[in-house]
Image (tube, rainbow, N blue to C red; front, side):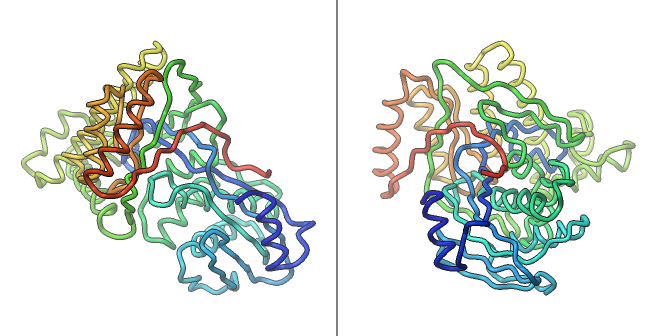
Length: 384
């Protein structure tokens, strides 16, 4: 699907599209720093060229009429109806509208056709792209762009919390709003400060391998891990002032409360503290142009996510093992977990062998085809 398609579909659904405006927002990759955002730590994401596109036309009244073109689903809903639509693809848009209204933006009715080319279930955060696309659009159409970019990201996060039931951190929405072509970003999730890092690794490329195992983050698997981290931080906070998240804790703090928390909670907290250290190590390595160290840290992250945080699965661990066997520089599970993709830092001279091998071995092992997604770093939410 392309911009011409969305225009044709809009006209067939809603009529003249001449005054409708095209907006887009990207999905994201995250080089390293997984499950650290809601713990106040560091993340290192970048926007990708795949994302959500929407053609939007303001209308009279208070009704939003939405058509999800790639899903072939339709919704018509009054913005003042407190219950909201039942289908998630429309609850995201409705939630963003309600949150924008809570921030003083006079959101009015609108017609919209939207579609995405972010692979669903791949851990590239198609949901954040959808939230960011409509938050940016509503700010532009109804708010005279008075809401700053970080607040737009927080509006997307609040939508996940209140309307979807996922207690996500800020990374996905941040990356979708702030993305910049040719750059990755280090975000301090505690302070909100961030820095762009040029990403043009000569001799290497980023490649996602989609296991085609679809995960669902709504409910206990994701939230249970966040609750584990919060319990450990709360226990440490009983004897140490100023502890709000695990970012405020040291390794000594964690060992001091080990006997007071469950082994499961301890291991999850141990992973988080290690991941904060690994993100900073990657930043130092990139400043030196040392991509081998970057890769080593990625493998260490995967081991922690698989063994301590327990968000991997057989298929993803298999992909990680194949990467090691093929001499891939770095590989790890990417995203919330329970399926999705591995992100791989691959030297150019090993790329063809890796792709051939991983496709052959994965099909032989699981009877399904994995999908290869070459990554290009792109821009954030925008009017097209």
